[in-house]
Image (cartoon, rainbow, N blue to C red; front, side, top):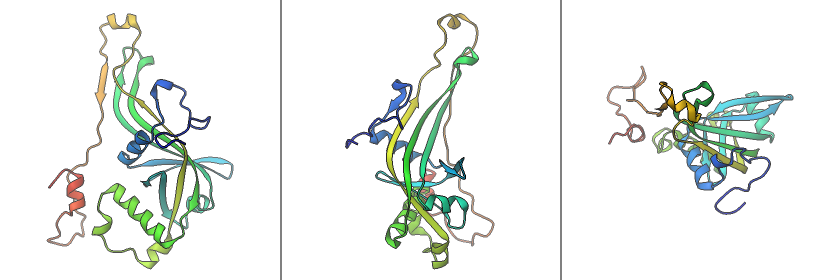
Length: 219
């Protein structure tokens, strides 16, 4: 792999070449903007896909969950996985059903899981995952208890291959269809964080923390 891009292989090559991007900067930017990944692996000879929160550090993606789950037991044993993150930017409305589409930015990552057992890397990985969801949150909460740490499993996926695939722009209709009195265009889609709502057991006088204010665009 070069310093700037991932090597193109049979594993990550995108069929539609003009929508492909193998640059590390593009892949990393999409991973950093997303909140939810879909992690695919094989268990008992069947494909399994599970939505998971995650965090990225360089060319490593961290995942976590309860050690007792079948999924974490399988992944902690070392398993080939595919991780997908998709950002939907718009619904593309064509003048025919055939030319309806979506504007999106997506990443597919391939790698093999490895268990994170060292105390220092495990704590760092959990901080990365937490701060990926809400930047700065790790330093605002109480430290993890020994019981919680023991019950939590963390796996790392060192990226072996990755590619981004993106679509933007208007619908591409048949030339003759542009003469039809049928609406065509794009409906933009945006992910927006709403005003924070404290839970039912929040103590009186506890203010919204800096991490939450920053996330929703406050001071």
